[in-house]
Length: 532
Ligand code: BGC
Image (cartoon, rainbow, N blue to C red):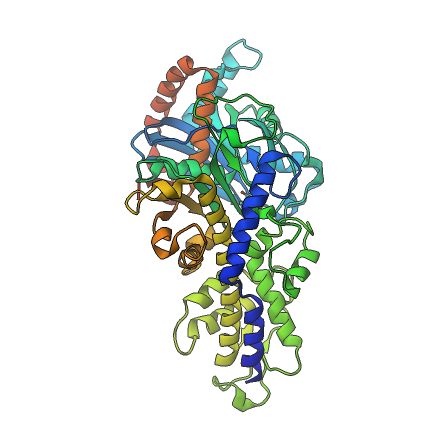
């Protein structure tokens, strides 16, 4: 009983009421406007120099790489021009030591090496042709520009952009910490390492994953109009949306095409309300922040995204374990365990180490609705080495995990609602042609009912118009959005360079691809997408 009562108290501390949601939206809008007016604000509101969204007719073969969390992905994308595309990719985990390397060069050299491996495996013919040319022609660089792959670089950290392929790193997030890279142009860092390996690759576009997601959703989305927001709820969280150029009051240094009257803005909402004007702040949020590599930053992200939810849960569980008045994951006497064996936590259980609970177990907890919670209890054993947990233990774990995730989903709704209201599209759309939002990331994709919880909170926002109003907002998964999105932006950037010669370039590349023996490519590396 004591455990149940204590669990209820903890759960109540994670409640985020309808009133809180509305206060959150109001403050989010205020901080959005502040970020559009000047630099150095909590939410960066970064102009991306991308001034339009695609309509599905774009074509061509591009490369994209994606650095933003635990993995580095290299892909080539064939845009078919009919809202579908074909993607070939490789994925490699970023070695932990490179995430905190001494120099930027160490990390970027590793990335360039992966690009070389990808080209050798998947575009061997084009790669070898390029090497042959380098050896036979007299140009000092050994190749002509048109024969070079245009690459979209998805770099999912806050970057001050000064052009479509230029931007300096503002700060690292998500556990990365290489001070040497801060303030440097990340496209130049990658290009330098690519050039050292003499690869036929030009870093043509710098893309935040949210911008890629927005572009990808617009390319594949079924509606008449493009998506208005691309959002990530994964390891980290962030959103990019289409803003009226006139609303961007702060100075922009780079060149851009102003004919559409719009520009995509990368909000960097992970840092919404770093000053904690309205964000909830439990003792566990405080402890998590204090022990993080960036205390005081990414305060919204630390309450919403996958990297942090497991850690909040872990800190709560540790507190409950230390509470002498209750019994969690231990047998007081043999009768207290319905599995008739001794409950204990292995000394080496990752519950005792920072980041030791993966958010994935929270999804298992939410999905297990069996009376015995047997799946969750098995998962507690296999992943956390908590042996023979009782039903009461598992219920407490499930309740706390559910509360942490529910608060995250309701906070996610704050950002989504504020941006939908800011765009003003809700007034002109219908349930048949709703305001379209593309989302990606492990949390929104795998956590059961995450989107339903978001919708529940959207419906209570003043100005959305209740459940009926919320139906005019469509949230669709833009799977692998950052890859195809980066390719789309590389296409725009390439068009800005030399439109005429590119036709020849693509013709040549298409021939190369057609002559490739695709059967040699492992199946799981090939994905064809069409609109959903
Ligand atoms: C970064 C963003 C990124 C988001 C999602 C955040 O930590 O600051 O740039 O879009 O994670 O990957």
